[in-house]
Length: 239
Image (cartoon, rainbow, N blue to C red; front, side, top):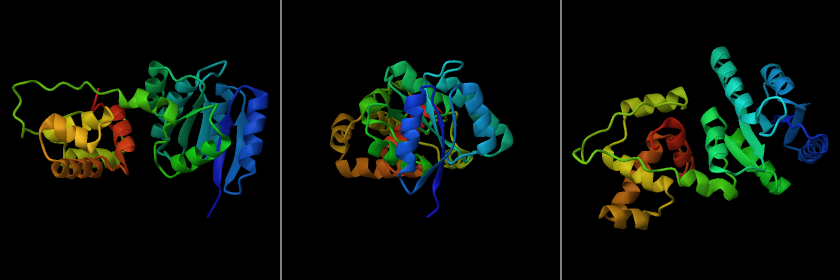
């Protein structure tokens, strides 16, 4: 298995040096570059094209969210979207968390978590999964409140604009859009409800819920409920 290449963008020298040393001790990871501010970091990302960029939010010249947004724009123009972004921060406020994902971050990691968890987060991010620090998971899962007009027929398919998703996900959803019932269940998934709770709220059986959840995961090309929740929020399926 080839090593995962990493770029560190962190303005605190001691923190950056400590992260580099800790990550380099893992045989599956290789730090190929580092930067102490966003301007240098953005140029480094554009040239080095690492597998994973670990980006601190609190950079002095441009915050990590804006850096993420600009790098995603560069990737879109260049057609190379291979680099994943893991945001590193001490801030778990709702606005900051959602802004990071809206800008295009793949994962969100709290600095006070262990280095083993950071390594786990990097591997998950590299594999294409959204890794959400448990400390901020509830912030993401609280974002639901998508209200459907009362006069819509339950079986009617709702058309939604898909944004912030890879093209293959868009194509799947355009071909197989979520039904109104699936949207209702997706909202409850984002709210953190279990299958049993969803069944109770919607007056359907747990077996029916499982079938709908499986269809939702397939349509969102998601491996699990958390990944589906993140994609739902980033695409605007759930507001």
